[in-house]
Structures are given as C-alpha cells and as structure tokens.
Length: 425
Image (cartoon, rainbow, N blue to C red):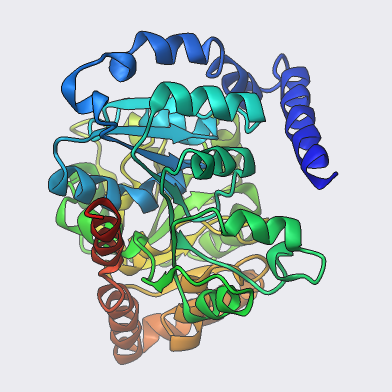
C-alpha cells in the first residue's frame, strides 16, 4: 500500500508541475527538459556498442540541484582522474542545477532525471546501463534504487546527512528505512548521522565528512581576479552580501543607510536571482550611491560609489576574496546558501537566525565564533561595530572561519577509497 501511495505521489507531483508550467518558468523548464528524454538518451552514444560501454563502464552521478552538484563535483573529478576509461553521466532533478551546469565539461552526458516511476526507472537504467551510481546528499529515489538493487548495480550515497526527526528513524518508518538498505554504501557528514544509521541497523556506512569543503578549496585555488571589484574596494572595507533575498535586504538596507558618513565601509550585493525590477527597488531604498556591475565603464570612478550590485551570475565565489565581512542570504526565509565559500577566505560571516540550524557548518561556525546568527538590523549593526572597532577580535574571527574549512578537507579521498573497494571486487 505504501508503495502505491509513493508512486501516486510521484505521478501527482508530475501532474501538478504540468499544470503550473504555463505560468511558472521553472516548472516549464522541468517539463520541457524531460520531453522525449528516452528518445534523446537513445540517440546519444550511451547506446553505442563500443568496447567500454559493452563492459558497462559508466558512472552515473545524480544531483538534486546546483548545490548538490557543487558538492559532488570533487568526487566526479576525482573519479574521472582515477578511472579515465569510464564515461560519466550527470543527472539533475531541478532546473536550477541542469540549466546552469548543462555544459559542464567534466561529464560526457548531462540530462534531467525522469520522474521516479517504476516504468521510468526500468527504462532509464536499461538504456544507461551504469556500472556504479552516486547519489549526492539527500537523494533517495525509491524506484531507481529498487531497480539498481534488482540489477545488482552498486549505489553509493555520499555527503549524506541525517536528523532524528526524519521518517527513517520513526517507529512507523519501516517503509522509508528500507530505501536505505538498497545502497551499497552510505558516506555521512557527521557523527550524529553515523549513529542514527547504526541505530536502525544500517552497517555499510562511513563517517567521511562533507565534500563541499574539498570543493571550496578548489574554488580558492582557482579563483579569478575581478578588476572591477578590486577597483571598487580601493583599500576600503567590503561587506559582501551573497545570494541576497528580499528578506535579507530588508535587514541590510537600514544598516547600509546608517553608513552614509562612513565612506570606509562599502557593500557588494549579489542577488540570489537577477531581477531588474527588484534591483531597481533596492537602489531606490538605498541612500548610498550605488552602481550595477554591468554599468561600470573603464573610466568610471568607483571610489565615488559605496554600493556595487552584481547583476550577473558566476562570479560570487571569486568575489569573496575582496570581502572583509559577509552576509549570506536565505536564512531569514526557508534556507541558507553556501557559507563555506566566504569562510574559506577568512572573514566574519552573518546570516539570519531563522533557518540555519539544519546546516551543520553554520551551527559549527556559530559555536566556534566564526559566524553570527543575527535577529535584526540592530543586532547586525552592534556586532559589526564591535568587530570593526576591535582589530584583534576581527583577526581571530577571520582565522576561525578559514581554519574551519581547512580542517575539514579530505572527504573526497574517503569516498574514492570506498569506490575503489567496490570496483576492485
């Protein structure tokens, strides 16, 4: 019965997305990206009978969205380096992942994942014929995992994280716990997740940490110079706002307006999504002189501006190198965006106090003194003032943030050790 309900929920979700598609751009991308997907899969070299494919030498990595892709990327690239004979397939559930990374050069094939119906799972795996499958963090698609188990294809979950309130650990959660038994191995981020899985008799588990730390180390090593940001900084302090939502800006704008007489503090704002109307509204509310990145000319005197708004995507991770402070958006609402990219450059990090608790790195950094969960504009102003007036405290906070990332690098190596034990058997 529960299996029927699960399948019904998948069909219902797909139906709702179809209804919303004419009115919602993301829903439309979700539907359009899956049109004729099996025909498109069948027309690629996935089905060509060359030597490597006849031995089933394909690794399939599935990521829900962009964040999970970045989390999985160090493993994808490590796998490519260690097993160059394998083809690599990457799939996404969400348009926010696929549309941004559909041209990622590290994979041979990139597709949306068809909805998790029994028929789709059977057909997809029959076409793809993977020899090993990876699910990043939260992905537990029951029908795909059942089909992989039936065909004896090993499935690995890495950077997984579990919490006591999840259905897996409820007294009535047997149906959900069964999904976890279908993995060949699960690599978890923290000790709590390890202990929770042990408590329900899941044995093939490893405490490996979070591969995002390896990814942000890659980002630091590959960071790009951004001359406009460097000109804007001009020996002034930069307060970087990464992935800003309206709820974040409602707290931040009063702080910015309180700095009209403090020309040494500047603000760089990177919106979560680029909407010209929203940016225009923010600029009207901000009393400091502001300019959009796209408006900057070679002769623009950026020293005359106190606010730079990033109206493009793709440079946020490199922008943090110019920052002295960072506010990461999302957690005045339902979530929190990546704080590790800022932390790796070493700086005090701020975020809202409403939705950060489910992010282990945010909890850790708050507890260690490298980050601050703020409740209001007044709270932000007070903490920022104390940090700016106490250079020793600022340096200590910078070091805490940076060391937190450095001390947690290495999860990718542990994932690859498990992969080797599977593929060599």
